[in-house]
Image 1 (tube, helix red, strand yellow):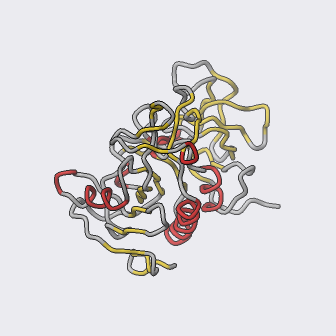
Image 2 (cartoon, helix red, strand yellow):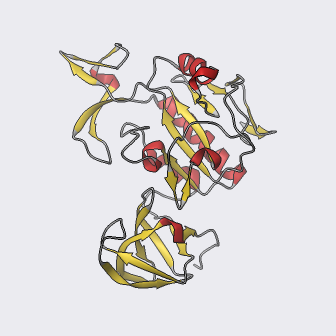
Length: 272
């Protein structure tokens, strides 16, 4: 698999043309979603329908086949109201991939039912709590071939476009979106795409002259430590859409929440 003229080139890729598009995209982020629909084909039909006012760059089916609806240098309409690292409106900054998956289900008798009425057996369901809470709920699982294809595509896109991060819709639209949900192995996909092991935290650098570290994700929280100075390297403990939980690399006792507008990914090689 490779990228030519902002399109995937592979025998597993089928091209469709969505009219739902914006201007030129200079991507910084890869954003993953689930379709919450009946099939990959139905998702493609919706994303290519002008009335839907939605689109994505790719749809990845459960059998591993890929539909490309827009070139990677064209804005797709998939993120909605969203924030990430000080940026808002991530359609203008993110490549969007939709994964064929029914999403959150509900228990009915001995089975699990989607919003569109399809019944799923226990071996297609994961009982888990979403990272943002809400209690244990049933979620439609992803297939192994689908997850492996996502890993392959994510790694290629990050490398080709020097993307800074891989996130779920639920990371950038917290409280509004739940996809791709707890059934998707986001941590491992993200780690492989970004070229680091799962236990190695992302590093960020402070861009403000003086950055307050707070006890919670908001200006209303009291300081947790002395302000950090410009150039300080941070380890990302827990990402958020506007605030992130970090630890100062050089001072392990300095830990708290900082505003994402004043930090940026640390891209330079670290000594040692």
